[in-house]
Amino acid sequence: MAVSFFDIKRQNDALKKELAAAVSAVVASGRFILGDNVSSFEKEIADYCGAKFGVGVASGTDALHLALRACGVKPGDEVITSPFTFVATAEAIAYCGAKPVFCDIDAKSFNLDPAKIEEKITSKTKAILPVHIYGQACEMDKIMAIAKKHNLAVMEDAAQAIGAEICGKKVCSFGDAAGTSFFPTKNLGCFGDGGMVITNKEKLADELKVLRGHGSRKTYHYDIIGYNSRLDALQAAILRVKLPHLDDFSRARRKNAALYNKLLKDVDQLTLPVELKAGMHVYNQYTIRVKDRDGLFGYLKVKNIGAMVYYPLCLHLQKAFAFLGHKPGDFKESEAAQNEVISLPIYPELNSSEIEEVSSAIKEFYKK
Ligand SMILES: Cc1ncc(COP(=O)(O)O)c(C=O)c1O
Image 1: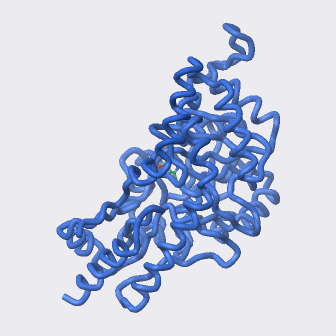
Image 2 (image 1 turned 135 degrees about the horizontal axis):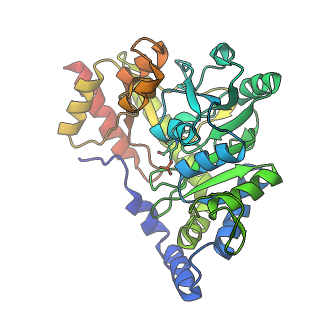
Image 3 (image 1 turned 30 degrees about the vertical axis):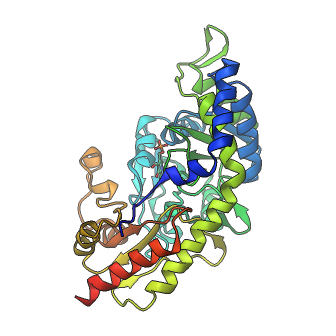
């Protein structure tokens, strides 16, 4: 039986009527840029995260970039982040003219290792950008304490982790601001690109609204050079249909992860995901460490089982970031992860026979 890595059609089919009604209402309104759907969704998502303000933007990448800009990150500044993440995290820093300063990850959680952050702080450090990778929150209590001690801003990259919790709070409610993504494969996905900055700071939210709309407060008057980066009304309407189901989606992802854990626990060649005790992982990805990763990946492919490698090359080793002067060996845990990780299908609508199929194929591979 083939198992696809991700199948958004199942979710959309289940919500077909509500989605169609939401799209029709936007078409009938004739209001496609900003408007009630965007402002209501901004409020709903901020409430969901336990924060005060949401500012809808065109993508998760823009959310991080604009939020860093609004926090005053500028050329010459340094921002500490993980090298084991999607490229957008470091791109957002570079777009501001600032320098991404990489810090190694913790082997168990794949997230920034708080114990290694302070040694990266210099007089130029302006912010820390922790990434809640795969849907598991970083140790935000430790990161916030370091930021406070050194007077640094904190920008959460919650693109993969909307709904995740740590220390009794949801991600996006800890730092000065957070950026999340509504890319279709994310836990809360729209029908294209979309993103949101979430913040408790009114002044920051206000500046972000100016930045996303060409730097304008008054029509055709421009205070600063801004961007065209707004969340579409159509996407907001779709996301408003999906948001009330997000906790159910997260529960289904967690249930799928628990079944994999049960089925794969005795396979010696695997290291299964480790959940932080103080947190709630929302499994945007179910990512394991394995022996002979490339062999397993090829085997699953032949069996028509979808799998992905997030990420096969750390950012400090990418050509685009060669100007930072890194070399192999600079971030040992991140490089070990790049060579060993594989992500299995985990989307909420995946059924137990499909999870059994994937697990059996993995067991077969290691018995050979
Ligand atoms: C960790 C991380 N940060 C940022 C982004 C960027 O989001 P978007 O694709 O919406 O620009 C992504 C998207 O994959 C991501 O996974």
